Length: 165
Image 1 (cartoon, rainbow, N blue to C red):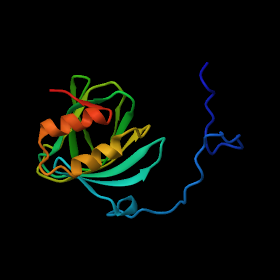
Image 2 (image 1 turned 135 degrees about the vertical axis):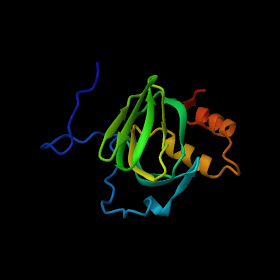
Image 3 (image 1 turned 120 degrees about the vertical axis):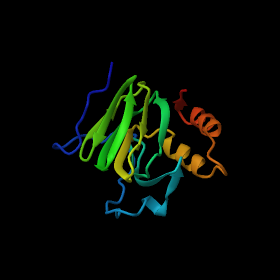
Image 4 (image 1 turned 135 degrees about the horizontal axis):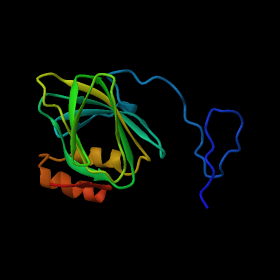
């Protein structure tokens, strides 16, 4: 039987025994990543904003003509909130696009890709739930001497992301 959903912030609730200790709150500034981290992933700059077991959020700066090839997260839902610019997507075989203040929902198990085909930088707030191995994947890609697609594909397989051709 599934565990009953208990919304957070809507009155008193019983703490879970496995609940993590409280994290300090605060503001993470626009051009800063959590703990000063910054990743280069296939020509894009990712600034991690928050990482918990439940979710992972990052600010993505996507220069013109950069993007991510077709891939799928089997265990995570992904969301992209476009802050500036335009992103082109393929979601489950269908082509679409998102512009400023659009939210893109990428359900787990659905293949998707995204690309900035414009001549301008695109900015987005992205997040996944649950976190899974995505921060570790970004860290590993960042440290590749050359970010060749075959190396990224192999790393993805080790971190819960399957890249497709």
